[in-house]
Length: 373
Ligand code: FMN
Image 1 (cartoon, rainbow, N blue to C red):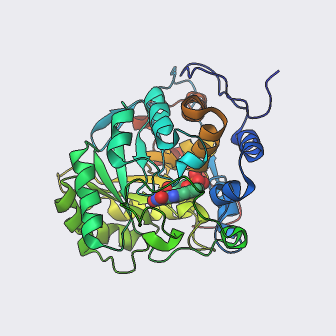
Image 2: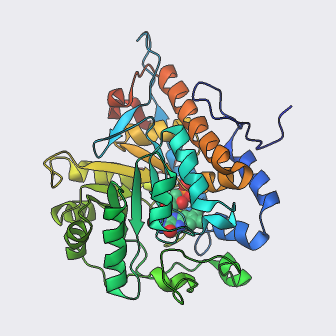
């Protein structure tokens, strides 16, 4: 019998999910991590209302299965023109070596094993170049503002040089959210770890070091120029902002509430996504293609992911679940989470008579539950 949260290896895309559900895996990770590190990964801002609501909000939608379609689903798709085996990717998250000694390198290997897109955080404990070398998977680099604008530009340039396929500009951190667990724990990067992308002494800064109060719309096009990469704007929750970002030069928009870590009582991604998708329909990316929209926040099951795709997301990204996978099983654990959720998505798609992500259309969902659009 499998222990709760146990991640068997190796990752096999045709195998059933390696965990019964991600809550099991979280409980197992909680038992392995230092309590302050667990709190840093698991926690949210303020009352943590938005943290709790994120998964629930996907579940205010209901699927409308199609029958007698004779299909078995596949999940392969493209993201900004790059082929991936699954529309389930790894969201950028900080300080991964607190979860596993190989940190971002293990996550990169896990994403590659699952054929999933990897997004690497500025606040990584391995360098832009080290992570690029560790993964065989397409990767995007997530950019936060640094105190020195020259250093921020240098990071954007390094991402382009290292072969990342896009620059993800996280715009929902003009100031750091008030995360009560971290304040209570006086959380800091544990001794021996450093933010590898920053020269000393900036490699062990306070958490607030990534704040970008001065960023404006014009920075979108500027960072595209500096990096030579398509820019994805992450942290958009309004249709008007999404359109403004695209008109400022973004290729894609990532609907995210930062995992409930920034604004408490923020609108959940599941609620904001249809508005953003509607707003950018008819807009074009700088290369003339349609604007892609992604979503994250509380995606924990194949049904959650399918709802997000039906609401117009081209991909969903997992934050904390990949932290629990990394904690419990290193690269295999990350691959297990990604292939597990992809397997659940494929299973649900088959149950709903949908052969591929291209066949997932808005008629597949209907509103249900406690809130109106
Ligand atoms: N988002 C960023 O853009 N950059 C980061 O460095 C970053 N660090 C994070 C660290 C942790 C521990 C967590 C949980 C999230 C972080 N995020 C960061 C937000 C994630 O990219 C993502 O939006 C969020 O985790 C998705 O929600 P989920 O954890 O419910 O899947």
